[in-house]
Amino acid sequence: MSATPSHAARTFGTYLPTLDGWRAVAIGLVLLAHGSESMQLVFNSDWLAHSATFKKLGLLGVQLFFGLSGFLITSKLIEEESRRGQVSLRAFYIRRAFRILPASVFFLAVVGLLALNGVLDVSLGRWLSTLLFAANYTQAEHSWYLGHFWSLAVEEHFYFLWPAAFLLLKISRRRVAVVVVMALLIAVWRALDFRFQISGSSPAVFWGRTDIQADGILWGVLTALLYGDAVFKKRLQQWYAHPLGWPVLLAALLLIEALPSGNWKLDFALISLKAMLIPLLILGTVVQDKRLTSRLLESTPLRMVGRLSYSLYLWQQLFLVWNDERVAGLAWVQVFPYNLITVFVCASLSLLLIENPLIALGHRLAQKQTKLKTSRV
Image 1 (tube, rainbow, N blue to C red):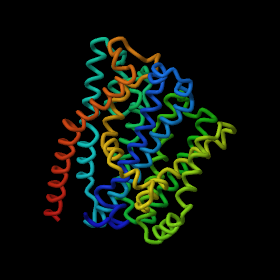
Image 2: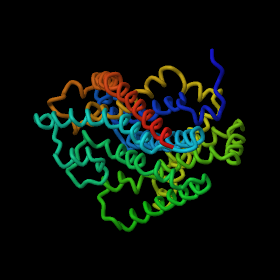
Image 3: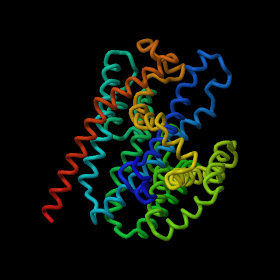
């Protein structure tokens, strides 16, 4: 058995098994939220009846994905800069494009064909805006079957903008300052826009916009930046070394989730606080990898589901639907447990036939690009 990697390697290495566990938790919350009504019909349980509670669980799952993305991408950028002395933006964009686009474009092609054949009701405007990464800003007619692309659009905008900003800012403390200011500005803007209807967006569009949700990713960015700084890294390790350090963070997150809506100012402050807590919880399980929570996250079943999480997120929207969104053409595969089985089958095929081969191709092309750039220097 190989030796356990050091904390630095675990945080800024190429693969962090703990994060696969977190992805499994995140996608599990989304699956529960979207599949609860179909399960309720089978089990006839009031507990499973779809409610605001389950909606919040699905949103929490998305927020976990945001925190993960900010933390992981920034960790990789720091690792590359430390190892090579610079970051290759072209190589980064090649890797991201081959990671994200093939599976999502294939899913969109399937939805498009189903819409053309009258199985689904998806407008051309909604489909095109989704393809062009504008799903969270379009005014096109809403469709449940493409509704989840709002969060993917937020992440795609982040992937496009942050690496370039990381490279331009150069100095670590400068990066920290800019990220903090941006995250706080987004929080203030979100509250003001909501309260005074400055942009005039409908609630459905408002809550999906990148300028409203991006701080959820930025706090993950900040967590990685702070852990990459020697002074802050020591302080964070001291916090996590305390037996109550991580449990206090978890208790705070659970309390925020349980609190009912009240004063709008408090509600919006808690949104920001939750976005801060999520990446700190994630980092704690990476740093303290011997604790029970980390071992559970790194268990084989959770890691397997975590590796499927992107395809699961794509395909669940087609089969895990609320009762009023069902369509006759997909009748039996939108009923529990067939819908859940179908989701995992489609996700597994997507991972094996689309994601894995094209991710590998993307890495090869990115590596060639990096070598070419190095040889020119």
